Image (cartoon, rainbow, N blue to C red; front, top):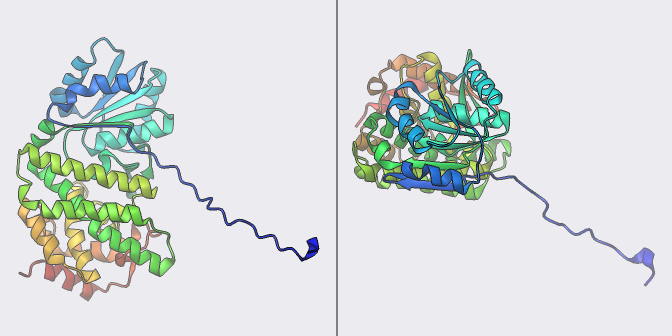
Length: 360
């Protein structure tokens, strides 16, 4: 056969690649904080360390961390509001001191600050959550306050997580309930991601979606076990928060854990700043979203009621009118991310959705 008659087919080599970053060490359980020095040694970290914490947390837990790290070069700083000015201040401090590792001890504000600073300076950080109030303890996204409201930005996931369930169980139950609600929101986040695939052709990760749904199911199935100041409850919620963070790392975005219910929550936070906890608003948004998706919204509402999370505007501490406005305007948040809240929602439709929240 002559060469000109030969057909040479190019191999269809699968060449898609993605850089997935996840925590290397995860220590969770009773007295896990005591393992922090061993974790730093295991990571091979040598050099100056920066301890970040909130004002009250620094007194309660930060001091314990400083004593555990006695003999190492450690400086500490109190984190205020998470905005670009505060991030810049911490960056300057870390840069001037030649910091090689940040240890973030606290809640979402402290951990998100550490994420962004570590990302901008290309250094690592360890997440030491003191409350299970949101899934940011393990994710690669951070929420930063701007003049236009909170925005989600790319950041480093923690190099390690040290979650002491004894400390977390001692936090106000409202914080754990908010974290629980943030996990239940994965139900509708996945539905919205799948909706976007149909409507816009957005690519999805089946594995990340499955892991995210498993996390939500874990929460709902264990709702009756999430009790105040209970260490077993803290363990269940922390495990789910970590799994949700891993799902986001696999997806390369917050998509598997953040859909229209989060856009709704961010709009609530924009309309009434400082009035609600993010996770609480996500919980109410999840019920509304599931109603619009035509799913089992009563199951979600019942689980939130069981653990004491808000399920109505009144319980959330805002007016029905604010929630109606948030439903209609949720599409203004991250318009590039298509969700069911981005579909046409009239004033009457929004009012009906709010009225349904009060029905038995």
